[in-house]
Structure formats: C-alpha cells, structure tokens
Length: 229
Length: 247
Image (cartoon, rainbow over all chains, first blue to last red; front, side, top):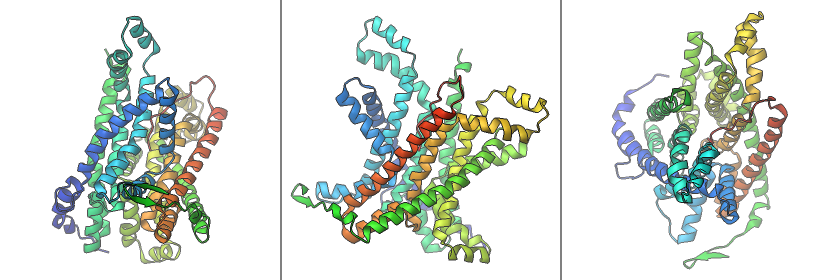
C-alpha cells in the first residue's frame, strides 16, 4: 500500500471551504454549525442550570427530568429523533442543518446546565447571605454577585464542554449535512484514499480542539486560587 | 393519533414486540453490551498505562503518553471510526486484514476506535487521580525500598482508582453511549436495530423511543451501582469529589 498525500491538496478547497467553513452549494459547514450551537447551548444551559436550582418544584423538577433524560441517551438518538419528528410536527421536512442545530442545542444545553449548577454551587454560601443581608434583590444577587464568581470557577469545564460540542458536530454528517467529516467521506469515496483523507481531517479537528484546550489550560492556571494575588 | 397542521402520525407501539423486530432489538442490545464491554476493558488498561506514564518524570515515557492522549482525545470519535474501518485496514498486512474480514471487521474496527479514543480520555481521568495523591506517598514508597513500578502498582494506582470512581463512571457511561456511533460503520448494535425497524415499518418515533429507553435504563442502572461502589470504596476522611460533566 502506497500513500498519495497529493489527494489532500487537490481537494483542500472543497474540504476546508465547504466542509469546515460551510461556503459552497451544500450549505452546512462544521464551523457554521459549531459556533451558533455553542452560543445557543450556553444560553439554554444557563436557563436549565438556574431552573434546576430553583426552589419552586414546578420549575425544579422539569429541569431535573430534562437534564437526566438527555444525559442518559446518546446524541445520535436525539439527532434522529428530531430528524424524524420535526417533519411530522410541522408538516414538511427542514434542512439537515437546522435539525442538527436544534438537536445540538437541546442536547448540549443539558450538559452545560450541569456545569453551570456546579459552578454556582461552588460559590461560598456566605456570599449569598452577605448579599441578602445588604438588601439586594434575587436578580441582583444572581447576576451581580453569584454569576460573576461562578463563571470564573466553571470556565475550564465550560471550555472542555465546548471542545466536546465541536467534536460532536461531526455527527451531523450522519443525517447528511455537509460538514468536514461528510466532505472527507465524499472525497474518500471518489478518490479511494480513506487512510489519507481521515487522517487529514483528524489533524484539522485536532488543530481546533487542541488550541481550545490550551486556552482552557491557561485560564485554569491563571484563575487557580494559588495564583490569585 | 397525533396530528398538527393537518398532518397525522399514527402510533403503533406493537411494531416493537412483533418478530423479527423484537429479535433485532435484543440482538442489537447484546451487540451494544459486547462492544461496550470489550472496548471498556481495553480502554481501562490503556488509560491506566498511559495515565500513569503521564505522571512519571522519565521524559520519553511522558512524551509518548502525552502525544497519545492529546491526539486521540481531541479528534471526534466518528472520524476515528471511519479511520479504523475504511483507512487503517488498507495498511495492515494481508493476513491480518483477512483475519479481521473473516471475524467481523466492522465490530473490531469499532472496538479499536472506541477503546483507543476512550483510553485516551480515561488516561486523563487517571492522571488527575494520581496527581491528587500527595507526592509524599511516592517518596514514602520509594524510601521503603519499592521500585517506581512497584510504588505505582501497589500504592498510587490503587488509591487513584478509588479517588476517580465518579469521573471514571461518567466516562464509562460516555463509552456506552458512544457505542451507538458504531452503527455508521455497519455494526448491528442497538441504534442500528432501531433504524432498521424504522426502515421496515416507517415507525421512527416508536423505534427510537425504544432504543432511548434501553440506553436510559442501562445508564441509570450503571450509575446506581457505581454510586454504591463509590460509597463502599470511598477513602475515609476525604470529601466526595465532584467532577465536571463531560460526555
């Protein structure tokens, strides 16, 4: 078996522009899916994390149920679910991109919610008591006292989760969305060069995830209590 | 009946327990469990070896383990599945390739991808467990006349394994859920079976719900058992250690 690495260069434009970025006739794109999914997942995660900590049972229990149900099921099942269910509910099929985005936000929101909860619970109780004693409202306590400290504590776990989400976007290729994985699959079927193709996209994914993990590591070091003045 | 905007979907749950659909689901479940069990054992071994190697000061061992962990855990499992199924067999020697083809190459490619990927993630869990042990333990072991390997085998790794029960459980459940991706390379596991039922009956919601419930029951059962184990093997005097959610 001899290798032919030139297959990467001759298909680089399709792989990177169409597959990675999402510019081209097929739509899709790993980055075009990952970035909104991370932002929206974060928003849903904050809502779920706060809901799970709420005292009112009708807010608390639905959030617990949602988080535990989603966390017990593989992502691919959630994606398939939306893929089959959405056309039934709205009466017409929607593009794979939107199915994937919805499924990711719903799925990752549950995981981010747990991180948010752990971060909030890591804030010392005395802070809440002090804020309450100073006469601040719940919203003030949450947004001006607890969340700024909590977010600092949860940044490493959050970045790790964003890396996971970035890797998970490859699952959109299973329902046919043209992302980096699907692009590599298409090229490898045409050129019959699976070894070179999959190794190449492994490196492309790695460049993104590894740089994210370096950022996370740096934040972790900078924010660890021993380094704080 | 369930309908919105004039469109209707008729639930027919009975498709799940008529044959051959029930047989497909049960066979799928058994393949999922077999795939998860074999991959888990290999992943744990890889995790212990490379996780321990990342904590030693011997540079070549540290470097090899770091390259393994950082490369394999940072690339999507799906890419690894395609790589081990479509790509890697091309470079295998002919006899090895023939052996794999005769013994179900989909399954063993799945085992390779899942165990090597999750091995790298478990290595990180085990490394953090070992690093949580005070350095004096290593020094005490060495000064009692144990070799480095003996100190790891007899003192550090057993203590680390007790410390990391919660994150290791989390990671093991991820492995179980991630076996669902093996359907993409044609392993007839649980998700594959659900899709097959959907193809034959057009009852997607029922089939996917059945698979989801089975995964849910598996995950809940394992995490309940592991909670018991965690309490039983908790090291006295230490607060239960929580970990970030990751999958």
